[in-house]
Each structure stands twice: as C-alpha cells, then as structure tokens.
Length: 339
Image 1 (cartoon, rainbow, N blue to C red):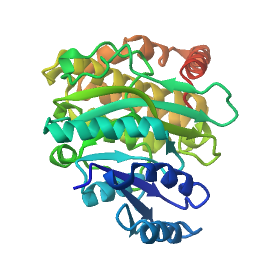
Image 2: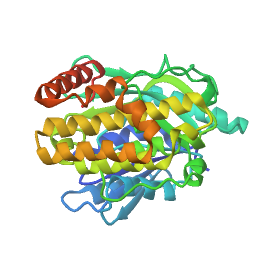
Image 3: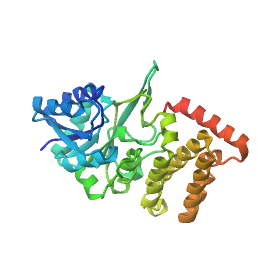
Image 4: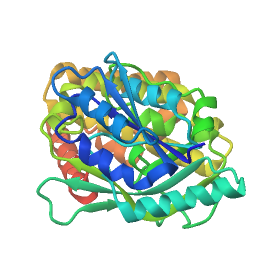
C-alpha cells in the first residue's frame, strides 16, 4: 500500500504541470501521483499525463475523464486513491523537496506505529508573481508543533489564517467515510474540501515546514480578483453549501466550533467584498440575499457573524460605507498576501 496519494487535477495545464509533477516525484515509491486530466482539449495535457504514467508506472497514474471541473477531478482522485493519506496539489503549484521529505517521514511514522492521524497540517507559501518576499502562511500561534492533538488543544486562529487545501493532508478512509462531495463545474470548492470533513477529524498534527508552494500570477487564475468577481455566483453557491452542512453551535468542541464560525465569517466576507467591488446593483442584491438567507436559516449564527468586526465592515451603509469596506479589504489583502 502507498503511504500518500496525491491527486493533481489538470485542465489544459501543459504549460506548467510538469514542474508540479517533477516536484512530487521526489517522494519516490512511497507516493502515487494521480494525474487527473479533466477533459483537456486545447493542449497536450492528456499526452503529458500518459507520458509520466508510462515513464513512472509504479508512481504515476493517468486518469482521463470528461470535463467536470476542479471538484470533480478531486473526487475522481479520491475514488482512485490507494494511499493511506490523501493530498491535492493543483497543477500550477509545486512542493518543496526538503519539506516533502519531512512530511513523508512524519506520515510514515504514524503509519508504522498504527496510530490514527486524520489530518496533517503544514505551511504554504504564496508564490505571487513579481513579489520578492513571499508570504508564508503558518499556524504556529494556533497549533502546537509536532504533537498529535484533538480539537480541544488548538489555539486561536487569526483572521486570514484559516486552513486551506494547500495546507492539509487527510486520512483517505476518513475522507471517504465523511461523505465528502464536491459540486461539478464549480470553482472555490477547495473550501468545501477543507471545511466539510472537520467534525470528522478526531486527531491532527502540525508540522511547521513550508511544504506547499501556491502560485499566484496567471490572469485566468480562479483567485484573480477580476475572475472572482466574474464568478461571484459560484462563490455564493459554495458559501451557501458550507452554511448548510452544520449548525456550528451543535459542534461539541468549543474550539472547533469557534474555528468553523471564523471560516464561515471569512466566506461571507469574501462574497460581500466581491459584490461591493463589482459595482453591480445585481451583485449587491445577491449580497443582501445571502445575508438574509443566513438570518432566516440560523439566526444565532447570523447575529454572531453580522455583528462581528468583519460582518460590520462589510455592511456599512451607503456609498461611503462601501468605500470604507473596500479600503479595509485592501489593507487586509496587503497584510495577509492573498489574491
């Protein structure tokens, strides 16, 4: 059995997927690299996937499917995974070889000892084009290092410090048992991938290494602000789904509950700022509707998020209020290094 299965969703990724795959090959026979070609038709993505599968038959597998979007490719990878643990690495990203080795040694230690580890968290680096000093997302204040813990032992997450797909490795069987489903043809489902399994995680471990390199710079990238505004309906869809999964106030662990509410608060903030920045009356109405939806479905959660700092800053009245909201967002973006 493989130690780690790594799904690499690819859609017309020929220009950069080889850098990603080459970085993952450093894991050798301990890993399987599932190159999921999501219906690519505009370049040589299918051929590149097949070439790696032929060259490294004991490590790489090429999986071809009709186009279903990022979430569909992730689910295909999960269904095919034979490893004890499961990781997603997007085709325009890559991993650091030294940190990779530490990751694999840590996972191997848990597997060898037959100790259940549901989630491993590590740092990721914003590889933003043109930026000399790269922003590192670490969790040193929130998670004790090198210690197997439960949710009651976590610390306080700062705004903007939430766990992303880039920073997480899950136990494969746990992901399957928790019923994870990602909608097809929808962007931003990586938030669901991280959020929905959380109550099923009983044990987690933080390794303080800069493992994942998250590239930001392509004009067509889903996290490009212009693209995000154009896809605001998909952001709203993902946020509504996340709101529907659980009532956070019924989560037994108070610390996990607090973290999940913070995550939802960030999702509501992102939807709101995109609507405001779009300058569209139609999108601004959609912003009002999702806040109304939250109020009608979970009043307690609505009050917590709406009257929190971020909620208040996203709902300031009038054009002047919108200007202040955008200014606050720009400061946060510069500080945290996202987008």
